[in-house]
Image 1 (cartoon, rainbow, N blue to C red):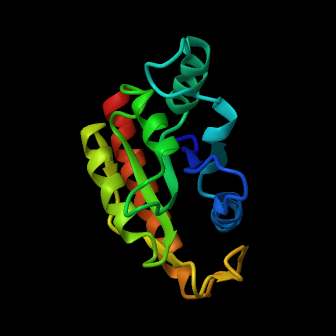
Image 2 (cartoon, rainbow, N blue to C red):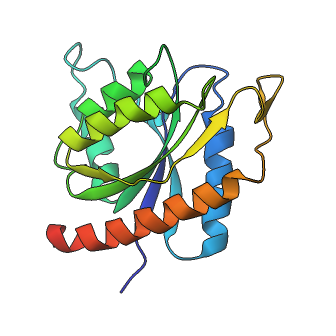
Length: 180
């Protein structure tokens, strides 16, 4: 069986965002495993306008094609006002079938580890027929980011990231049979 393709989705588009640092950290851990093809998928690259406000057929087609090429996802989710970013919600809404019957893991961060954003994301993923896995890494802005800007994760998060990746791969492989 060929290796699964897993997208590490950066869930923020704002200037000065921390998600690229977290995403690269997750990808470095994942790449060491050698068990799947992992890639960073930055929603900022797709320049999706607010859904329904402009013709975005070209951007939407590119976004859906990228998602369709992936077997599973790891969402890098930052907490904004107890939820996910508007940019991530917008990107989720731009696709439907491309999400269906795939698995997702979550790496969140915020003042309480991004737990509230992760819980909101889980509800949305359920509606999109994405199976979110149980294990999730929750990073603290206070202990895992130096001066709130430089990502320096505690070693204890490695266990959760690897456990989450194990579950994402198991579920992604199982769900791929539904899409064939």
